[in-house]
Image (cartoon, one colour):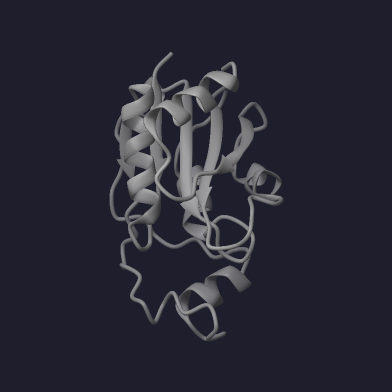
Length: 159
């Protein structure tokens, strides 16, 4: 079973966890890079006119991705990481899911968050996938989880 850890990280926090996870489980890594990088002003959730606030208010927003994964067909399981924005995944995660064929694949979500959990994120992302895609809600991976902790978590999923 070939595994991929794909992630979007606005501030570096999710990237750090994604790299530890990939190393722990022997997975390839793909960083989802926005065509237009987010500035700190863009990420100001207290400003309803900030870029992230506007995107999250529009369920149809699909921020463009700068880079492309050439070999998605090779992967059976994709661990998909992101920061929680407004109690769900950033819209760029929908862009990623809608850019590739996830038919028959398992997508395991993981996130970093300053306060909220994954909530309905799996349900929110399901429409961006094929009906044969299995989405597992996964867990919050805040702080610096150890490789051992991450390996144990992945094994508990019984993929």
